[in-house]
Image (cartoon, rainbow, N blue to C red):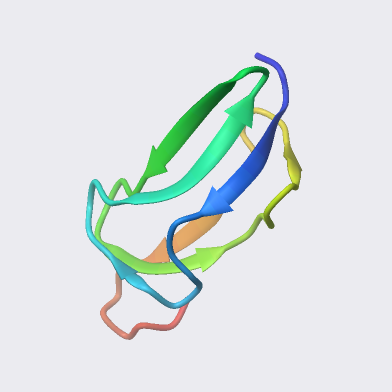
Length: 70
């Protein structure tokens, strides 16, 4: 699988997202792929817009402990 680029974030750091919410868009070659939250939690981005991302790169963390801090 080739590298991609973070096109945009649909939410900002510290936002509470629900499972299934779209959180980011990644471009791989000529295709755009929406990334959705796998669980409900507070988002902390780890990759910036326009960052090159290899397969397996951490894009964000979701904290699910109820405290709202990553």
